Image (tube, rainbow, N blue to C red):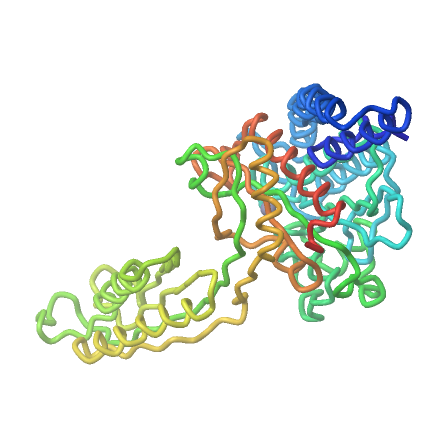
Length: 464
Ligand SMILES: [Zn+2]
C-alpha cells in the first residue's frame, strides 16, 4: 500500500506519502518520537524532488497534436477552414476520437454531436469531472482557438495514464460540436438549444439539424441526452485568451472570472436627405453627422467609468449613400459587453441620454432596437477560480484574474455545474485569423494547471 502511493502526483500525495512512511516505520521499526520526527524531515526532503518531478505536460506531444489537427482544413495562409459539419471537421473529429481511444477512453457521440471520451474512476458513486473545448473553426480561422483546450484535456489523460493514477471521479474529455456557429453542442447538452436554431444554415451549407446528423448526433433526441444540474462534479475549459492582456503583461495563466454578457442594438438615425451642394450647412438635418456624434458618445460612455466594460459601433450604413446627397438615414450597430448586466444597462442608459441631447440639437431622430442575440453575463464559480489560481501558484506560474470578452461553451455549462476557465496567452492578442499563435510552453503550462485543477477537485476541493 505504501509503495503504491508513489504513483500519485502533487503535494497532497506527498503528504499522504509522508503519513504512509510514518505509519509503516512506526509499525515495523518501533522508532521513538524524536528519531521519528527527524526521519520525517529527511523523508520530506527526499520527497520534494519527487513532487517537482510530478507529471509534467509534454510540450512536443502537444505541439505535434496541434500541428496534426491543423492539417485538417489547412488553408494557404497557414490557418484552417474547419467549419462545423465540413469534411475537414469530420476528419479532425476522427483524429480526436482516435487519440481518445488510444488513451483508453470509452468514446461516444451524444445527441448534440459532442464527442465525449470517458475514463473510469475508483468510486462508482462519484460524479464525472468534465473538461475540454472545441475543434471546429471560423472560416479563415487559426490553429489554436479550441484545439488547445482539447489537446490539453487529452494531455491530462496521458499524464494520468503515465503515472498509472486512477482518479476517484470518472473523467470526461469533451470536444463540443459547432462552437463557432453558435455554441450548438453545449446548448444541446444543457437543454438550452432553441428549436428555431435547428433550421439555421451553417457555414458548411448544412442546417444545424442536418449537420449534427452528419457528425453522428441526432438533435431529435437532445432532450434525452442532457446533463441536468448536479449531474457532473465540475466542468473546466482551457482556451487561448484571444486578447493581449496575458501576452502584454508576460503572465502565464488567466484565471477567468466570468464570461461577459453582450447587448446588441440596431440604431437608426433619421434626418432629411437633401442636395449636398445647394443646402447650406446651417439648414441640414444630417443623419451622418448625428451618427458620428453618437459614435463618440458610445466610446465616452464606456471609457468615462472605471471597469473593464467595452462598447463598440462596428457597422455603419448611410442612405441613400451618394457623395452628393446629405444622408437622410444612417443605420449603425451598438454592442456593449461586461461581466455585470447592471453595468451594461448603465452604459446603455448613458448612451440613450446622450442620444436624446444629440437628437434635440441636430433635428435627427434616433431610435434603438434591441437584438435578440444578446447573452447574459456568465460568472465563474468563485471556488473554481480559487482552485485554478492555487494550481498555478503551486506550479510556480504567474496568473491574473480576468474576464473573458469572447463567448465560450463554458458559459452554457455554468448553469449545470461548477465551471472554471483557464486562459493561456495568445501572441499579440490575435485570434480568428491564421496568425493566431500560442507557444508550446504556454500550452504545457496550461495543461499542468488543468491537471492540478482536476486533481484538486477529485480530492474534494469543491467540498471545502
Ligand atoms: Zn473557441
